[in-house]
Length: 599
Image (cartoon, rainbow, N blue to C red):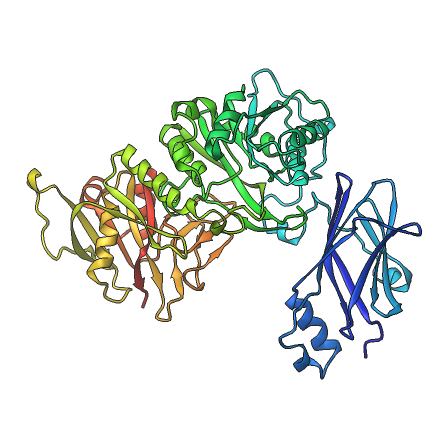
């Protein structure tokens, strides 16, 4: 039997810029209304704000165990047990946060708040003393531990912890288009740049906000910049004469940049303190790099919780046709951006995607740092929350992809196969002839019919072999055509289908090198056993994927590559054959729109 009526837990907390924010949950086991008080000494703190949010997990966990017999009564009720508490604060002061039952002041729980630490008082506090304190703004919670880099220090390292940059090390200009940001988020972004361990940077803030006298615009933002930068001359702020839009404002920030490298950051997001240092470290090993990107995750409005880590693949041109998987953090050499004429206002909503295509067209080498170095804030108007916040972005996405196709001379068109799921598909305008060949373990690939040795140039036909291992159900012509049209693309070796079982679950979406092991002998099967049409920290099952190989099932290869690199004999496995083509500089593709049922 439960004797203590109130249960509560602080899940996250931060105290910055004269404001403390606390998130967590609290519940009365008798389902009575809870009140919240924050006091300093005997005085109630003015400006207290309390928001209650639904927490079905708390509803089921506590009421199912502690209020048995009342389960039916909770159905249909709002599970408003989560809280977000904010109040003006000073780091030198001590505060008391109290949860109490309305109408019964004897039932209460009290936390003592000092800086960014909360301790529960009384007997319960002794029993449940927080061993590690409360997770801080820069802390590494369980959500973060799923990322590749793990814990690596406090965000607030400050200039004292900065690495000394040599004369040959590059100046990195961080460009930020600014438009009416949330003041606290804006200041946190500035501080996250100032606290970089690599000190040779310049922060370029181009502010297109209308000047209405508020903290969100003009003079108000300029005051915030002065407060956050503390006179650091590396922080450069410019109030624009008008709002030029996201691309135009970014170009204005680009014009302020003096660095050889351009790093792009949104006005309310956060960098890890070693983001720039990791990029410079890579450049020492990869001096030909012209384009660098890292892994990322999301952070909530308060910058307390970090979640939805995106572990990106190494440079994958075809995946970029499915989604802007690169996003942030990314750095591009300034001369590459200038050669591309900067950011295109016609691409607003997908301007980063567009510049990534242009950078990829020009960069000698594109490098991926497999560490979470950027935190994308889920703000009310951010596409991190939903692309529906910027509906014009969907059309801009297609324009960016198709403009890339035109520049490259590709006869292809990107379109939404399913707009509601943001599912992009590419169709090629090619006359492709394909022939199905059966692979036998004893003899290798047989020849059902002899392919013509020469094709008249007037027909413009391109020849493709589709190799069938006999391990999939008979496929329709559309699947073969889907495989064949990609097999004749420049730089493509083998094209594989997505393999499903009879119930529609994924058997394999291709094979990749295991994390931390780049050898071909250690591969991981993507999405094995997963539901189709889902997303996780590796991205989406419906993305085009550059992969190492696939289960022996079905693959397409151009007749040109088949003849150039030799047929697949009985003595070699599919993985070995795929490796042979990879070593020649070709990449392999898993096409999610070519679907085959694995027997």
